[in-house]
Amino acid sequence: MERRKFLALGGASLALLSSATLGNPLKPNKSNPKFIWLVLRGALDSLHTLVPTFETELERHRPKLFGSIKEDLLPISDSFALHPALKNLHQWYGQKELLPVVAVSTGYDGRSHFDGQDFMESGLGKIEHDSGWIARALESKGKSGIAISRSIPIAMRGSDRTTNWFPSRMEGSGEEIYQSILNLYQYEPALANNFEKGLSMKAAAAGQMGSSRPGAFPELAEACAKLMLADNTLDCALLELDGWDTHNRQAPRLNTKLAELDQGLSALKQALGPEWDNTVIAVSTEFGRTIRENGTAGTDHGTGSAMFLAGGAVDGGRILGQWPGLKPKQLFENRDLQPTSNVYDWLADALQQHWQLNRTQTAAIFPTGKARGEQLIRDRATA
Image 1: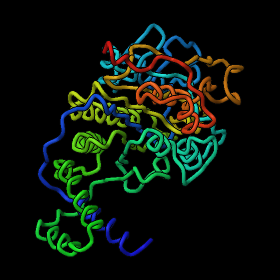
Image 2 (image 1 turned 90 degrees about the vertical axis):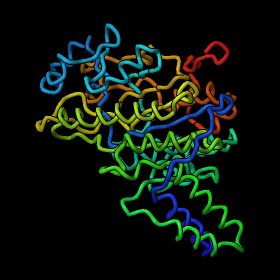
Image 3 (image 1 turned 60 degrees about the vertical axis):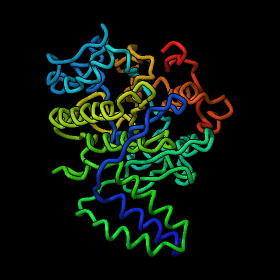
């Protein structure tokens, strides 16, 4: 990397990692629909999250896990219920702002978290570390995006339309330091503009650094919304939430993680305000977990899982996807939920409808995927 580019990025990082006063966010713009992808890293157990209550095999396969939530589940249909911690998502389903999709996968056929996540982020049907599906989508539509992450994730690589932000535990820098840096850059307009943009992003995310838990998911989600509202060129964001690798003590651990997820999504909605009606959030994970619980009250790496689409722009209140069943012959390799559809296909439909992309554009974003033609997004003319 050239020295000047390094200095510019370093200066912007100093600005982004400090606290400041919140600026005035711009008004929602219906011509710029927002898309947010939330990656659940570690492999979400869908059977403990979107529970098939009609399945007689479920309690036999996981007596302890199912028994721990059985009496407190939140029904969303005659066949499925949400985990008790997902109170906001349960409400959203009733308000037709949530679309759960059962039995999905990316097509990745291994059981490595790292490879599975890289595969999912590339969106190419193979691992490609320098080209991500969000970056291709941004290039295709001419939009810009931000990752709430310490570095640029694979999903956003391959485009200069992406940036990233993450809070710091360090104490904030004084305004005199910022001014000194700007003075240093006075004869380098590109560096000065980059640094000033960083200061603006820092101001937009204000309020997040004063917490006793910097980097907690609800705060990151709120910061994400503030950053998108403060910059009308940011129409896309990537959020991450790890901690889903539940090989042991799954019930209490998922009680905590799902509550964190639910609270974070609620904070995101609240911070977006009226822009919520203009937003789609896709939630997915690299792969699922085994049907049967293991000897340490957990589950191991699996295949099929679930995904969610949420937001005021979503035509929700339905459960999508084809359920494969949990009998031995219906399982993948006699151990996992059998995938019946691909995450990429649902994302292609959502992007095509929400961002008004054509088939050529979605094919460039997901070469191995195909739009299913399922109506996922509300008609703006009638919304």
